Length: 248
Image (cartoon, rainbow, N blue to C red; front, side, top):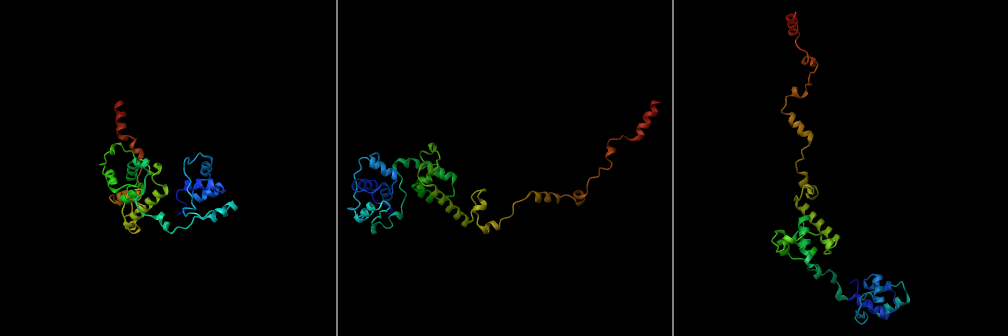
């Protein structure tokens, strides 16, 4: 574990019972230095009872003594074998009660803008169940008409790095399967073997050549003869002479 249990309560105890500076307490408890200063001023964690890290086997007294003598010393959390692997515990993501009502909007956003994501990937991102995702995909959710798609990152349900990693993983999976998602992402997601086996896209020059195949070689290659263009504008001379004779 990178920080002790009950970090703020531990910070309260260290402020009240040691001469450690705010930076040392902040680094040990995983808090911001200004937050520790706010605790000392009584503006933060009001009413929180101090939690003794020494009595609870999280910090050795000798560490406190070293920190009090050296302002640059960093306190070391006591090793706890029972806590090894605790941060890697598998299971559904915990979503605070205040944000659980935002999950349908996040699911609809993911389904709409990232259809390549599987139900399992969406469930890990926003901490929901597959039946809920399926009901939104099939638009059978009881409140589907009132749900507006909202980015889960903006809602605070997941991090942008987590969303990017999930999308990239889905893209790699699609590419490995050789599946085509959209026209824009076709070249990106289709496997190399499939891409090389695809017929080349038609070009404008090739289309014109195809049209020329239906024309005779003489008609396509022989230039038009406009040397006698004046004949289109000159009337026959014989008709003019006859008209003059009649006038006389």
